[in-house]
Amino acid sequence: MQLNILTSLRHDWTVAEIARRYGIEKQRLRRLMMERLDMILLENLPARYEAWLALGDPGGAVERRLGEELLTRYVPLLDSPSMRYIVSEAKRSIANGLSEERAVASAIEKVREVLSA
Image 1 (cartoon, rainbow, N blue to C red):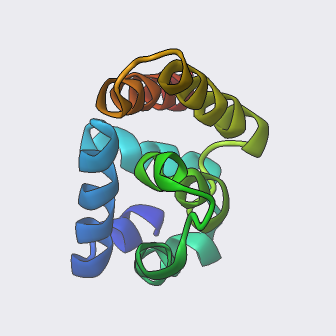
Image 2 (cartoon, rainbow, N blue to C red; image 1 turned 135 degrees about the vertical axis):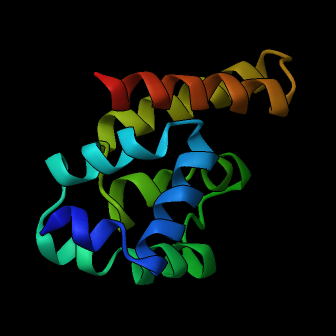
């Protein structure tokens, strides 16, 4: 049932967008979603993703680029403390002179690692 939901047209597009954003294989992300999200979240996945696109991460540019609220609130695949730590590390790297692009890329790699654990 979960796989049927995630392979429908709108859901498949949403999964593909999130997978592309974090550099994760679509099949792997589907499996994570089936393991970590309940049926209600899965059914509402496209609406939740679109809501995040419109409203999410009011905290700042780094939070938005990393999708802090996307992964902790809208599509809760990570716990808040882990994501806050990743965001704070990215901000600390930027404060220490690393470009925002490189800091965000490194943080996205950490997100991938946490999701894979």
